Image 1 (cartoon, rainbow, N blue to C red):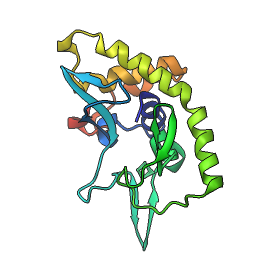
Image 2 (tube, rainbow, N blue to C red; image 1 turned 60 degrees about the vertical axis):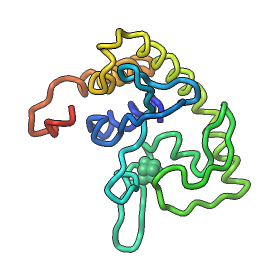
Image 3 (cartoon, rainbow, N blue to C red; image 1 turned 90 degrees about the horizontal axis):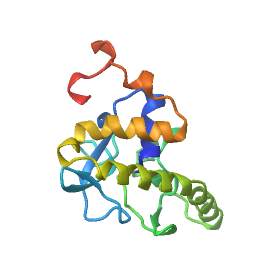
Image 4 (cartoon, protein in one colour; image 1 turned 45 degrees about the vertical axis):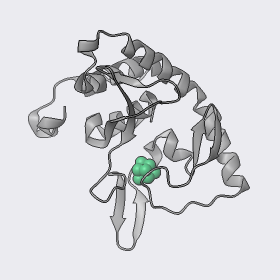
Amino acid sequence: MNVCDLVRLCVPLQVPPPAVCALEPCETRNGAPILVGDQPRHITLRKDASGFCSLLIKGFGFVRCGVHALRPAICRIYPFSFERGATRYQMGMIGCPTLWLVDEPRRNAVLDDVESHEHDRVLDRKVVRRWNRLPREERTEAWFWVWALAQAGAEMGVDVSPFLEPKPRSRLKPALW
Ligand code: SF4
């Protein structure tokens, strides 16, 4: 996931990023890992106890994405994945058990999605580079979520300030934000 996905997902849902996302350890992140302290991380969707995306809705014999219109780019192009600005087949990369049709029209739709999200990826690299230049002691996981939303929101022209302002405790789960 990138920081633009984070804004598009969390701001409309009004959920704190750690409720639906995690910063998982990684070796590389298309060459631009997010440094938490000195540890390279990347943004992933939080998984439930079964290992599936926590945003998946299961029941009554079906599984559906619970945030279809807001799903991140990595989900929009699934079962393809980004690789150096292109796509390639990468089945089973994310914990989403929904069956996907892989044919030529689907592939073309995915390529359109990749193209339209290219500027997001440029913006993401810019924000992450800025983050990685912060002093090591400021690069904490808790601060990353707030900082990244504010920075990416400003770059995207999305007003995230009401979302970042303290809310009555009843509207937030305390340990998450
Ligand atoms: S498409 Fe699947 S993995 Fe992506 S947000 Fe929706 S439920 Fe989660």
